[in-house]
Amino acid sequence: MASQLTQIFQTVDTDIRQAAKCLRDGGLIAFPTETVYGLGANAIDDTAIAMIYDAKGRPKFNPLIVHFASLSELKAHVDWNNAAEDLAQAFWPGPLTLVLQKNVDSPISPLVSAGLDTLAVRLPAHPLAQQFLKAAGVPVAAPSANRSGKMSPTSAAHVHAGLQGRIAGILDGGDCKVGLESTILDLSTGSANLLRHGGVPLEDIEALLGREVGKTQTVPQQIKAPGQLASHYAPRAKLRLNAADVSTGECYLGFGQMECDLNLSSSGDLIEAAANLFRHLHALDAFYPKPIAVAPIPNTGLGRAINDRLRRAAAPRPTS
Image (cartoon, rainbow, N blue to C red; front, side, top):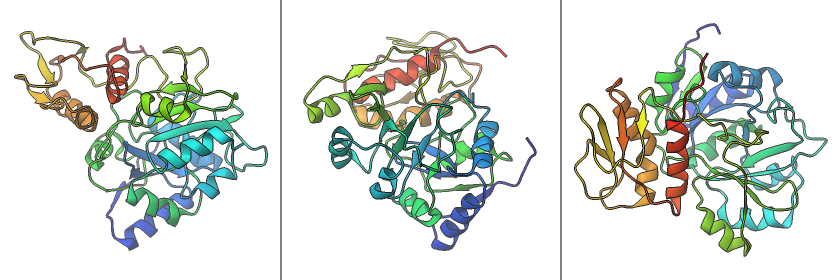
């Protein structure tokens, strides 16, 4: 794609309005959410959505999540149900995405859903994201603001390093608090099925619903939501997971009390570890081609989402 000047927008009202107008007029704007930075486009504009796939090098069978400023706006585009209402009241705004049947009269571009009759939707909690979405005045489709398959960005600098010259602008809101993408739950079939672990732990969802949530296979035959590809979130360096110690020539990403190059959380706090995951992977990848050994992470709560990202990051990379 042709190179363009990527403008950095600050958190002042004039910049937010300018960035929102640019998006509304068809430009791509990266903006912070509590999870990671999203690459936003007007979800009603077919050309703008096609530009997302082009800028990211994203497979066009991989659907996008649509972000809304309010629940009332969101409900106009999907077939709402009681489970969705319960989850929305408990976890929105926040790091949860719901997949629901798309209303037949919704003007959202069919490219967003990659030909499916469902729509992935959420209300982000980040105050700057809320300001930006309100100023935009349109539904905003926004996958993570990185090249497809690469590490997710948790700062404006990460976005700039990966997409400079490919997008119109970046709204700089500092570091993302959660640091992992949203949990994705499919409610489109009358039951609840987990499509991706994320910022809302599975245990919290099951406690709210009062029942066990179904699980999709790790790599489903049909991609229904982001984050389901076998190889994803990958640094350049090779990863070695569940490493109890470090080998010569490796960087060591630790967890808990240990000697290491960077520690996700020396106190063993999974919330802190999730927030640091992509930030620390970006930092250690600067020493490429040194491999990265990663200490074991407990597979409970947010640890499930951390381990999901690490497994996909360590998976064999697709060849071009």
